Length: 282
Image 1 (cartoon, rainbow, N blue to C red):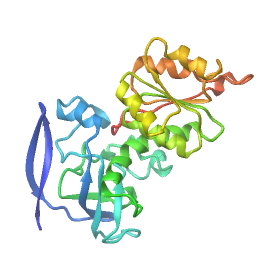
Image 2 (image 1 turned 90 degrees about the vertical axis):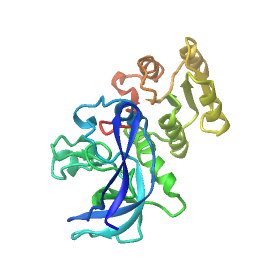
Image 3 (image 1 turned 45 degrees about the vertical axis):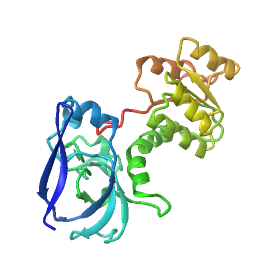
């Protein structure tokens, strides 16, 4: 197969179906047959409706999709870890590989002109095949489906990074503002890390109900003018040990620090994190 189908997003809420050549893996690269490629909120906001992004978020007319998951079908010279048949999730950003941020494993912080995100500056997952760097591929555990892998890669990764920065543990009461996909992921991961009780806020009643029905939060609080008072009541006026904003709302970003416990003698130790929008700039 030398030609494959793909999708580009020219803006104006339209989709462009294209035929392009199937790439061949170069040094340290792998070719994946796409099994799942999900749609991120940033795709809708900054590409599909209109091209809003600049810098790392600038769309360069490539095959869309930065949440890909697939199976290795070919490896290039220098590939040392993966082999055909491996199931992988792809971290959507490839950095220069040599700057301080890349060498620390934080490719998203790469400021080199060589930095490129799938679906933004290099071809993404909305096609039959994807060319990826071996170093950005993560083996997908067998119990997880390809759809699981695509959905986990960006949304859960964003939430997990925030919780890692908080050094969250079973000692902590956790506050989450925003129960969209990233907020729900933060709740699931917070549970797995042992945090509790978990308090979450959102403006949408259906999201609050879902979080409670799934057992992801202990208290689902409407994000209204009484939110702070309710959180204070639930915590005996002490606030939460850790908080994370997953809403992108200016109002919510005042709720998180305002309801995070300040430890005596260490006013700088208030532990909050902002979980940025799921985009190549986050």
